[in-house]
Length: 168
Image (cartoon, helix red, strand yellow):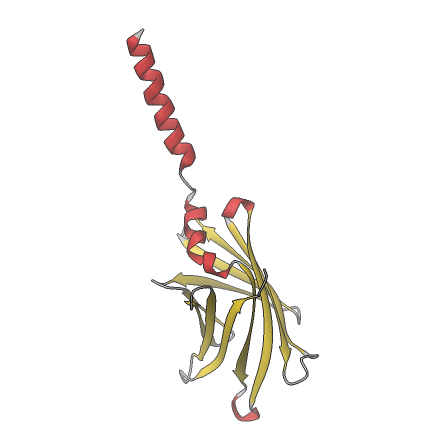
């Protein structure tokens, strides 16, 4: 009887540990958790010789499918009157177990679809898209900063600082 009890305890403890472990996808996606929640902020975007635009952006991020997929939506309004939409998109981040990579698929307001591989760094992550190298990193205690650099020249062409929306 004692052997059966010991066996039951061993099986129970082992199965509890297996069930408590996160999936590889959930573990990978947790590295991007600083994007969660509702944020807003101001930024600028350079268009080379045609000048620079300043804008206000709102962003919302949440995990879906038990933390294995991340969904974000963004909307940027052009300064100074903030009535013209400069950029609007929705993005889906997911982990590809076969390659060990996080992929981001972004649907843009003009109908374009971009797919990029995310490279997670010590803090934040980078990806290549639209001729630029993009990076997002934690900023302050609760916010994040996003920058873009032209792949050909190396010049910075975009910067956005996002902070939590107060009261949210």
